[in-house]
Image (tube, rainbow, N blue to C red; front, side, top):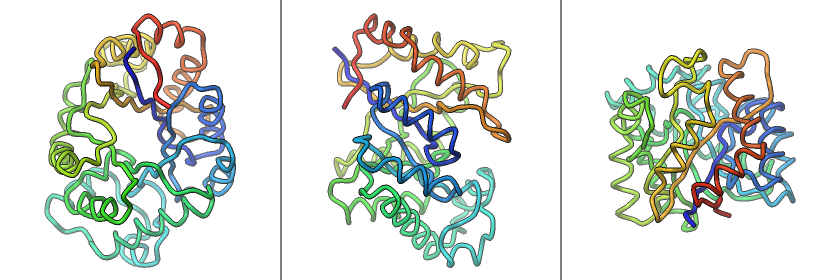
Length: 270
């Protein structure tokens, strides 16, 4: 049997999202959750993790909402959109000291609310692998020997080759090489990218057939295993990917998902 680590991202972003993810995790339909800690819903969501036995990590968020640290808030009262953050990172114009403070503030918020240290770290919209930010993450790994980081250096299909190439090219490959060199990679191969913005199913990477995508991901998992990230949740007003979240939740909680795992010879890693 091949082993798959299935991680639900965005836990803590809202109460409906957290509730759906926690229910799936408690049923054994997820391996891990990644937590956004700068949203108003985090305090209650983090408290719900206490005593749950759910494996949780930090989903470093630098593109939505407001900073937690005073140092970064003084420069960015509102966090920048992803395209701007990518440009600033590659121009080497990010405020390093303030971002280090923000990383520490988000770690502190994670630990205070959940009562545990994170098992892994990754990035909302994969920001953890951007230039300078990956240096801060690698410094954190050096300070915390048991911590692992998501490797975005090899993002496999099906479909959406442009987005997968962008993830690897904006810093994933560089981060992957450094994680491999120190043996702190959470995974070698990563699955889960598809087109949230294609609800009518006109492309092979559309999420309208999430089960079909999952079946193809499961078939591509190598013998040594892989990590797949997902975004299940309950409907939440104002969430731009609410439809995708509800589709994912329905499938991951269904007998069909268990059938597809068995058919592919895959078990979820615990």
